Image 1: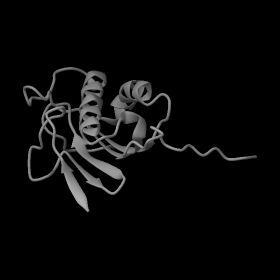
Image 2: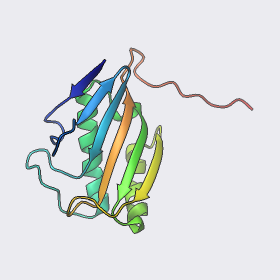
Image 3: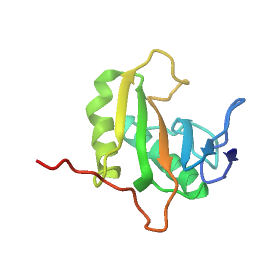
Image 4: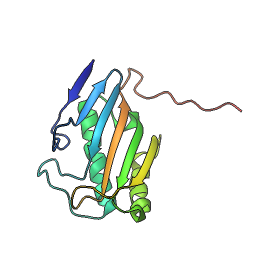
Length: 139
């Protein structure tokens, strides 16, 4: 069974898709661009500032879905300019310092006007223990 996630803690969808969908123990967050949830306009700024806004939007959506950034297991990052990788990665690395999720980062030709970055995410629901299980190889 799937449940649609909709919240004002992140910008609403700008088309026929959901902010996120909960399926079983996973929350699939649609690609987020640096929209201010209050104005629904793309924020001004460099890729670092826009990455921070995008990740705040994802955090708000995950919170509404009963999860958090600590539960993210995978992200897809789409950059307008691959030369922005380092600046995006600096901000991204601070948010996911403790448990970085699996990630793909690619440069794309088409992002909405004035958007330098788009990020989607897959997260697990919070458990009673509150965090994911991390496996470390035994050598």
